[in-house]
Image 1 (cartoon, rainbow, N blue to C red):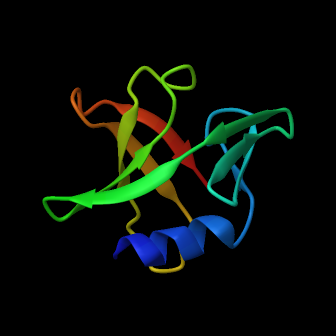
Image 2: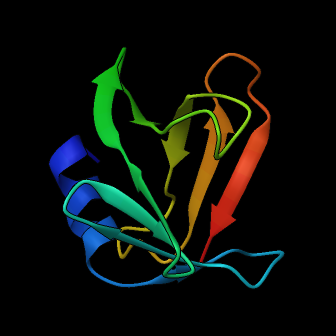
Length: 91
């Protein structure tokens, strides 16, 4: 899956946090959390892996690796680029 595919899947619908109630939407290079927080983001590819760059005030790390095991984009897993720890799961 390339960066263009990920943009298309993220923009296609709203997502919910697996272990919480927060709603996430991606629109016009911004991450919208519960209709009250608007954070700029950028996707990029490095060494065959896809990453999202988000301000550190949202997560502990600025760059998160994106894993999506399904071609329909039903679940996205985000892991810290340096720590490798799971930061977020969106369904």
